[in-house]
Image 1 (cartoon, rainbow, N blue to C red):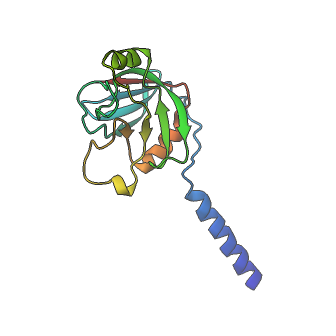
Image 2 (cartoon, helix red, strand yellow):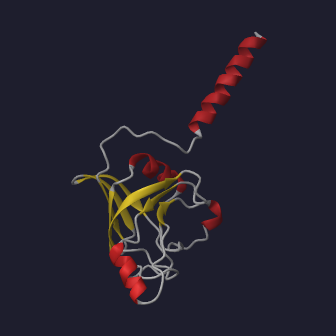
Image 3 (cartoon, rainbow, N blue to C red):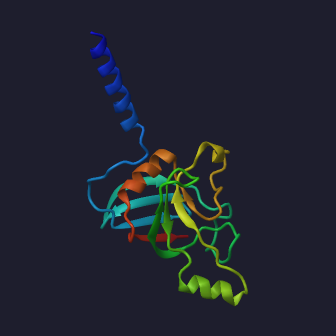
Amino acid sequence: MQLIKIAVALLLVIGLTACSSKFKTYNGPEVTRVLIYKENRTMYLMHHDSVLKKYDVGLGFAPVGHKKVEGDGKTPEGNYFIDRRNPNSEFHLSIGISYPNSADRAYAHSLGKSPGGDIFIHGRPKKYQNGKRDWTAGCVAVTDKEMEDVYAMVRNGTLVSIYP
C-alpha cells in the first residue's frame, strides 16, 4: 500500500511539473504574419487573412512615431521579421524583431547616432508590472502567459508588420 502511495505521489509531482513548463507546443495553422497596430495597442497572429490570436500589447515608453535612434523609447514601424529567440530572457520568453534594417541604420548614421537594436516581442515579469501600459525601451510586451503561446506559435522568419 505504501509503495502505491509513493508511486501516485511521484506521478502527481511529474504531472504538475510538466504543466508548469513555459515551453508549449503548437500544432495549429502556421502563423504567416504578425501584425502590430501601435495606436490600438493590438497584435494579431495571422494565418494568411485569418486571425489566429489577438493580444493587447504594451510598447516603448515613447510610443508615437518610428524608432530612429538608440534610447528614444520608440517601437519601430515598418516590415521586419522574427530573427532570433531567447528562452532565457529577463522578460520570461522573447522573440527578436530584425530591427534595424538597412534604411534604419542609414538614417541613424546620417544623424551621427546608433539606431539601437535588441527589439523583441516579450513577456512582462512581475518586477515590470508597474501599472504603466507603455514601459519598454521599444519592444512589444504581452503577459507572460500570452508570450508562452506566441513563442510556441511564431517561427523564425515570420514577417512582422508594425503600423503607427
